[in-house]
Amino acid sequence: MTELKQRILPAVQKPARYTGGEWGEIKKDLKDVRVRVAFCFPDTYEIGMSNLGMRILYGVMNEMEGVWCERVFAPWGDMEAAMRQHRLPLWALESQDPIHSFDMIAFTIGYEMSYSNIVNMLNLAGVPIRSRDRQGLKNLVFAGGVCAFNPEPLAEFIDFFSLGEGEEITVEIVSLYDKAKAEGWSKEAFLREAAKIPGVYVPGFYRHEYNPDGTLAAIVPVEGAPKTVTKRIVENLDKAYFPTKMIVPSTEIVHDRANLEVFRGCIRGCRFCQAGFSCRPVRKKSPQVLYRQAVETLTHSGSNEINVSSLSTSDYRGLKELTDMLIPYCESHRVNLSVPSLRADNFSRELMERLQTVRKSGLTFAPEAGTQRLRDVINKNLTEEEILNTCANAFAGGWSNVKLYFMLGLPTETDEDVLGIAELVYKVIQTWKEHAVNKKRGLRVHVATAYFVPKPHTPFQWEKQITPQEYLRRCKLLKSHFYSRSITYDYHGPDLSRLEAVFARGDRRLGPVIEAAVGNGARLDGWDEYFNYSKWYDAFRQCGVDEDFYTTRGYGEEEILPWDTIDVGVSKAFLKRERRRAYEGTITPDCRHGCAGCGANTLLKEVGCDD
Image 1: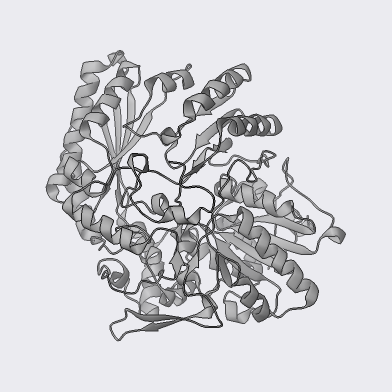
Image 2: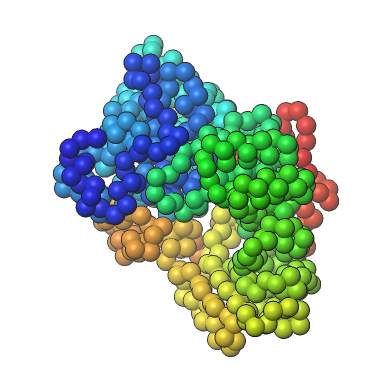
């Protein structure tokens, strides 16, 4: 570490964010390294180090001979100010070398509000932010993650995107780069070859043409690029790489625990959920492999908590077998075992009582809508009876804290649906009065509502987002009907969700907006301390871009969508059919009750979906 860094670090918050040196980090001798990868997470250390996907790909790349992958995180505001004052470029943790000296710069993007951080990190690194301004193979920038399923807002900044799950495709990409560097290829030659790798999308190989009204007229492939690029998946999760030798953070992180991923995909088909469609098909790990990975991870890390996770953990058919093995181990080693992502329709009081023998923490459920009609519209496949029966079982078992999450602005929502949330909450309170075994502790019901954001690759991708004014009106309407002291109500401010919708459904004309906003000082937009919508408002005005075009306008079903080049395995015909069923109020049963024909099973070469 340089003397300058040593002088700066004591003056900033949480200096351990920037020092590296943690137990389990991977260091290599540069004389044995041919390809250096700066793996960037566009948020702070404590967020990035909680991300399992980053841990997986860090390990995958570092297992490659001749490749050294190092971690890079966005600095907090005080550190950025010091870096700019002293002209200190952004560096990687393992070597402390500036990332402008690396061959490849990779980003994993899971949240649209990190887009400003991507541009700002490149700027902090002294790397040209636009792809066309980076010549040669040095500092080749690529990105993956769920936001890559609509890559267009970032098309000007990213050289290519890796679509889908990265364990296999990342090895292919880095191996191709290794060959290109050794043979002295040009950047253009590398990108042409990279575009031949299934799952690689090179935005420079597609020309977007627009109609006079601003809608897309055509997406034209050039340079021999395919019309669509299909995401990659890992078929056999039991054989896939998993980082049991995890890095142990040297400062507190958001999820400071070991993580165990039990399966990928989701059987449910909630019509608003991007992850539920874009992560299909369902593939699961065996309980035996999971138990081995859990023991190895806990042994290496010394962690006192392990989290069993997935999009809907209680849908994992091997959950009882897994917990039957894990609970004795965790009890004997004083490790806390947590199982989040439970659904109200298959909540197991027996399981939760076994997991929480010392202290009963709060329960969290997401009914999403207050009336059965609207829950059927969104295909939640959850009834009021199931919600209340689950609460009755929990209250009878000693629980007294419940968190309930809803969305406002869902398609077809009326004031009756909004008030249905209040009615459901009062039924939960009445259920507690009838079934609670310990009324002295009192009941706490935390209600939270979010502003609905229509996302790509879902049946609601064509929908309008309600205006911020209408969203706030519905929040106030709901709040006016909460009279009980047992209720705590929080609602998300509209500005962040409006901007999230713009970038979730945006096109290439948003690149200059992002650049202008960063110039205005936008960064760390996912943090309340830093988000300032006025910086974005000014950027939209500077660039002549109307936010309403991407939000309250909605999209026509026959309109060309910015993300039509990307194939996540779920057909557009299926999404349209699901949208029609939504407006009919017709539910589609989950995958275990019969295949609905979404198309995702065509991504599997050997067998069909696990469920």
